[in-house]
Image 1 (tube, one colour):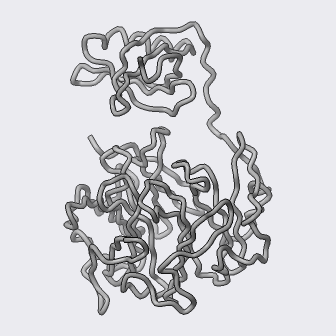
Image 2 (image 1 turned 180 degrees about the horizontal axis):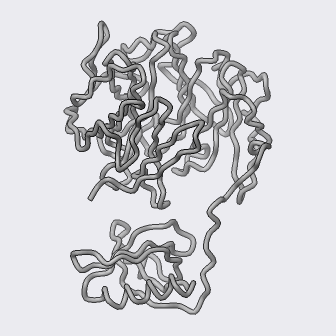
Amino acid sequence: MARFEGLASIRRALSMPNGNVQLDIKPDGLNWQWSSVPPDRARQALACGLAAISGGWKLYVSLPDDPASDVLEIVGLSKTPDRPEPTVLYKTPDAGIGEYNLLSPVDDVFAFDYNSSGKLDHLVLYRPGTGTIWILRNDAGTFSALRPPSTGDPGVGIGGFNLASPADLAFAFDYNSRGRLDHLVFYRPGTGTIWFLRNDAGTFSPLPPSTGDPGVGIGQYPLDNLADRAFAFDYNSSGKLDHLVLYRPGTGIIWILRNNAGTFTPVYRTGIPGNGAGIGFYDLIDPDDRVFAFDYNNVGKLDHLVLYRPGQGNIWILRNNAGTFTPVFQSDKGILGYDLADRRDRALAFDYNSNGRLDNLVLYRPGTGKSWILNTLKE
């Protein structure tokens, strides 16, 4: 029996040099995904796909039992009209979202797996320096605050972390190495403070090695500089964001920590004491340097690092081989036409095709309206 058989929307049909046809389809109830048709049926598939796109019809498709396979076994043109999805799923001019007003310039937001379902389907919104944090549930575009733990402005923080410093930062983390970003990390650069919070039906509580203010850092990394930054990383290419990257722009310092039941130890380190040597030949000596995780191989794993220097055009992408990092892409003139020539430039990984892979790059220049989304870099 097929893994899926039924109607699918289609938005692109491409003939490939190897004779295959690639179809960008969205089976009903699933996400957008690229699927392929072998050369022996490629001509018919391409004709059906182009006819469906031009006529606004859905395709009839069948996907094989193997979830790892992207091959279409059946392609046919249906008589069902296709309704394009809206390009904007949620929009508000000035009211924030889910009663959170987003009126403070320090407000920050990230996605979170609140229910430990493996889905990043809740939003965390917080206001450093005020104790304010809300977690929003989405019900078909209607966002509402979960209470507890959402608190007003001023609030009381969450799980014992008071969010009272303007320097406070947060992100989601896979603390248990289960492939679920269902824990929260809060840290306070310059103080050594970092907390890991577990969620039990809305009750958040700290896990080791959470430390107070001032704290002692984590895994021997002191977190005693205001420039320190941290994020989750898939060091082992396991599909799990269960390692921490901590770095200090302008100094060459960067560490990667492994978690073993709350005991964090370095698997990669350079610097402290003293300055470091960067990573993968990227020196990290500019205060504007930024780093984030990226799915370079289009496999659903954030196991590469992007390092960039806004204002100077530098951008590198590093591959990890058992702790040895080497460039797979490097440029001092930006990337694919985006010049990275302004210090305001920022970049992030993005899943443009809704296929579960953060393999596109968003680059934008705040204050100018300039924003680009780049296609996968992997041929």
